[in-house]
Length: 256
Image (cartoon, rainbow, N blue to C red; front, side, top):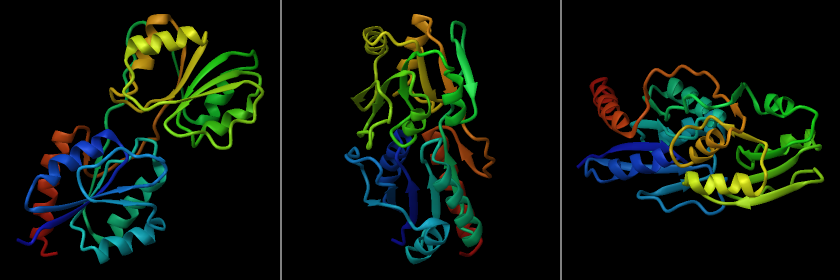
C-alpha cells in the first residue's frame, strides 16, 4: 500500500492524541516532530524526530525529501516561529497545512483578569509595589521578569530555568501537568501568592491555576495569543481528523 505521509509538528497534548489516532491507520505513515526544548519529553505513539529544521527553508527541504503529503501544525499556541515557518513552507511547496490549536480560556464570573499582549507587558503590569507572583509561562521567557526584581517569584516549569532569574527572591518548582484545582489552591495559599501570571494556553492540563485564582479571589495577568489567520484550522482532535482526510483527498486530486 502506498501510504500517505503526514508530518505533525508537536509538543502539545493534542498533538500526541492526534498522532495516536492517525498512527493506528494502515493507510498513513505519521511522524511527530518535537523541537527538543523539553529535556524529558513524554512517550509518543508514532516515530519521532527531534530538533529544528533550520528555518522555513530547512522545512521546505524536509517536506520534499520525505515526500510529505500533509503538515499538521499542532504546536503550542504561543510557538510563533515554527508556525510561521510552517505557513511559509506550505506556501512554497503547495503541501497543505492544517493548524490544530485548542481554544483559549474564557473569562467567567469571579475571574479578575488583566489581559496583556506580551510577556513584556505582563512585566510592566505587575507594577512597582512588591508582589508575590506565581509565574507559569514556561522557562523560555521567564527571564524577562528579571526586569522587575522587586517581586518575589514562584516559577513553575517542566524543565529548570537555566540560568535562574537574576532577582534576589525566587523559588522554582519543577512539575508537569495536569494540575488538580485543589492542589493549585493549596500551592497558592502555601506560598501566599498575590497574583498569577500565565499565558492563555487553554486546555485542561493547566486550567487548574485559573480556577484556583478565581476561587481565592486572586488577580491573573493573562498573556493573550497573537492573532493569526490560517486557511485550515481545527480546534479539536476530532475536527483535525476530519479535515486531514479532506486535505489529503484534495491533495491527491491535484495530481501531486
